[in-house]
Amino acid sequence: MKNKHFILSLFLLLFFGCSGQPSKNKQAKKSENSLEWNTISSKIDNLIKDYQKLDIFSGVILVADNGTPVYNKAFGLANREKGIKNTMQTKFDIGSMNKTFTQVVILKLLEEDKLKLDDPIGMYLTGIDATAAKKATINSLLNHTSGYGDYLTHEYNELPLSEKTFEKTLARVKKMPIEYEPDTDQVYSNIGYILLGAIIEKVSGKSYFDNVQDIILTPLQLNNTSMNPKGNVEDMAIGYFRTVDDKLVSNDGFIEYPKPDGGFRSTAADIIKFYNEFHYGNTILKMETKMQDEFFKAIQPHANTGGAIPHAGGYPGANTVKFEILRDKISILVFANMNEPVAEKLGAGILAIVRGQEPEKPSYPAIPNVYKHYSKHGLEYVKDNFETLTMNFHPTDPRGIILNQVGYFYLNEKKSTEDAIKLFKLNTELFGNEDPNVWDSLGEAYYKDGQKKEALKAYEKALSIDPNFPPSLKMVKKLKKEL
Figure 1 (cartoon, helix red, strand yellow):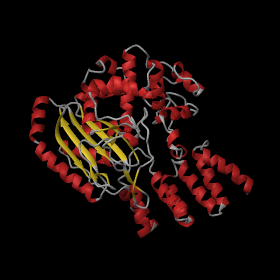
Figure 2: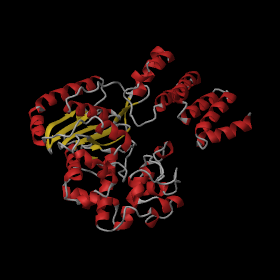
Figure 3: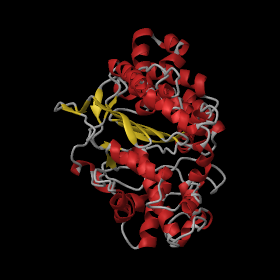
Figure 4: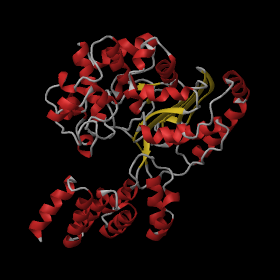
């Protein structure tokens, strides 16, 4: 699950950088926009048709002008097996938009003088990394600078569902070490928001979920936002994603339980209402309280620029995005029950249309696209056309993931070390100067092929990029005993 404030530097550049100049006559601009909504809606319809031709989007879209919907439509199926259509009442997994709920609860506790943002987290949590306890603050957790990384690893995904509740996940992450000195870097961290949930419970004496209900859902009357486990949510869209070999499968087993970092399910109308309160309201928080939050404070200058503030979330089979143009109070919300980054791509296209620009045409998801063209045309074609084939890929994810996943499909599913080695070698050509993982994968393919000396070279190359890369450290040690 990604956040999605997003990592700020990239998305502030993307969406504030193309925002245009401050409006000298805000009311005139608003009236002009209002007259154009029929044209804008027609262009949005045409863009969505392009996505649907590729069968890469199903979901809902809500565009609002000062809180009033001007485009409000559902597309595709919520349940492909049963033929149930998406509607505007369908609940979607909101992914890391969930984190804004956690952020708001923390700010409410700040407003009630129950905590301070510069409090070290060791004041509230025991059994965590000793350095984090002393040096990481609540603010560090909020802003992804705490030193913690992610817990959503392959190992976690393989756990039984009973081990994935908030309580079990908290016990697990408290044992994890930090990856860097707090407040010396910014690395997206789901662990940080799990720990914020625990701090909320410690400070308030109530469950995290009761806090969300009492502080947010009840006052705002968000009656269609669910904090139930996935299987107990009515009118919910099932998520679907494309495998490497382009099969469309459901995301059963992913994010079954809601937690402070993600897992709520909601409707488009509820999320628009929530973010309108976050950006403009005072029902929950006073403005002076909000201004103590680094993210909220950072976006305020864009009330005069036309910049679009992004919030989003996603994991396999679920993707959400909301852009808020603060100057004009225009909201663009896309929920998709298909793979990221489709909602973000489509949302960016709608944002371009609203701004009078041409939207980017959709393209097929990068990983199955590369697999299909490698199978049909071979390695040189993929190498020569890599940028074009991989346009539909999340901009914050390492691009080495694409060939890595295709290579592992050949290695593990098709049992072809020859194809895997070709694909992994190309990956090292493209991304070998920055990503130790691409060399580690090549080492694994060489090792499975019996080429132990070549495997050792690849693993050592990985360690030249990151001397502490765990899987390569382990394999170098093993190979030196075997050779």
